[in-house]
Image 1 (cartoon, helix red, strand yellow):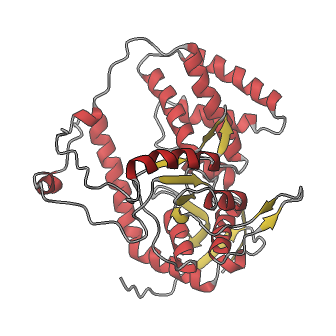
Image 2 (image 1 turned 180 degrees about the vertical axis):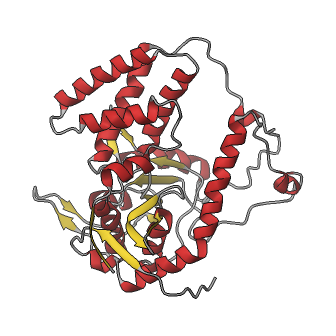
Image 3 (image 1 turned 135 degrees about the vertical axis):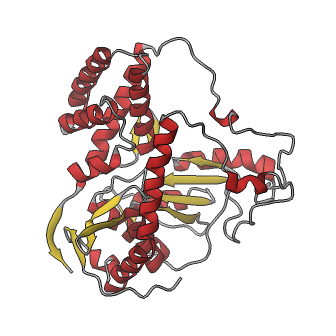
Length: 375
């Protein structure tokens, strides 16, 4: 779609950094402005619809399949469009933030796809947002090889995973970039900068599993190689024997016993430690031997909120566990942002109303660092 927009005032409010000018070019800013003109209204409509649907569901309206797709559901011959040429084989897909070490390790891992995650696996500081774009640019131009001060070499091999970029969600804003005095959609910023700077072939596909560490890629790939052989995927397995109703995806087995103290403590500990890492600029964090991202923290804090709402846990008990985990975190890491992480937990897990996401408010309060505007 061609959009000829009138002149807009574009301001970069983030602190300038090394090589930022390679990403924030006049052409890139103009492209983001055109994307904003084309999609801003539709984005706002989607967000309003999300609130409307949430209100209806909270009020008891059942979640059902939409009437608009009824014809498709009743047409046994209907099939989705085939994947693009480069999106056919995703038997192993690795995910992680677009930092330089992760990029080299992921691309060399043996996985077919690396999902460079700018949402769940990235703490969206301005340096991380633009630094991630620089990483992707350097990968495409094969100038990312480097050696650490300790002597470890990072070099791209010849058989690389295909890059698939995941922008931040529609609900997030990029407050370091404004058009006519208002922040721009973070989704459009992430997509626009990558799309403009990285024209390349179509990217890899699906029928496999995610991994979050390069060492797991060979293990996962072996399993899917045994099933798929030389085939890139198996769309012919349509499971026509299975007929799913709208109620079945929402049906969960009821658990009569309340959550244990250890279960609550585990949720509190994971959310608190992830919040601390996220506030300090890390979006993918090793916790208890597992790589965790923002989705883990979202699940943990929402589960706590649900237990409290439905009287499956006592608020006083949760607060006692929170205080104990704050003390433990402070002992583990004297640099931890314990006070800020605790405040974020209380706001997003213990408030009367449940915030839809922890990221928008925390981003505005803690990660936005503006400097003097420059066009």
